[in-house]
Amino acid sequence: MSLFGTVAPIFPEYAPPGADRDMDDWSCDQLRLYWNNIKAGLGNTDGSRASFEAEMARLGFFADCRTVSPGSCAFKQALAKDGFDVELGLISGVLCDISETAETVTETAARTANVLKFLVPAVLIGGTLYVVANSKRIFKTFKR
Image 1 (tube, rainbow, N blue to C red):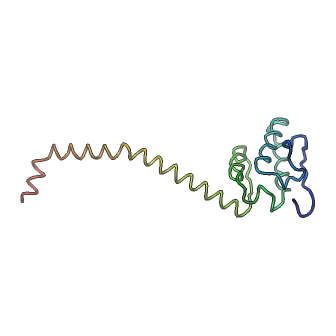
Image 2: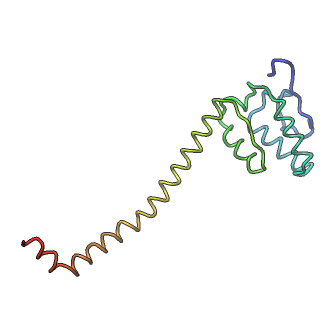
Image 3: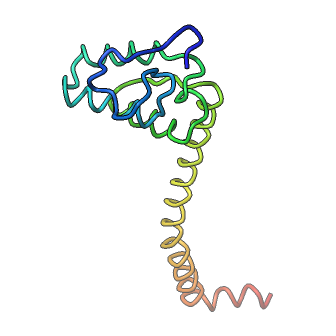
């Protein structure tokens, strides 16, 4: 709830079913559904985008979706796909950035593991073939 009154949606006909009248009390999923309803009804036009951005700017600092909430990162990512730059609260924003970094590290580790899956056996087989092919020279070195 806003400290200075209710933040009512500009397009109440596109509000999610059962949503509170005050957008500050909406969850991230409800805000995302609201944008999807606006897109479906009005299209992804400059006007609808500007209206939704104005709605987001009206949300209070302590709005449910700007604070730490389970859907805030998914909300930010979903709206980013439509070209929005979503400002989350400080804690929620930091947690999303940490989550995105962890996902990137995990993806990089998975790709590295896939490369190593083929690289390690190739190195072992290549090393073995080298030793077999050059065994006389290798063993002469050890006899000295």
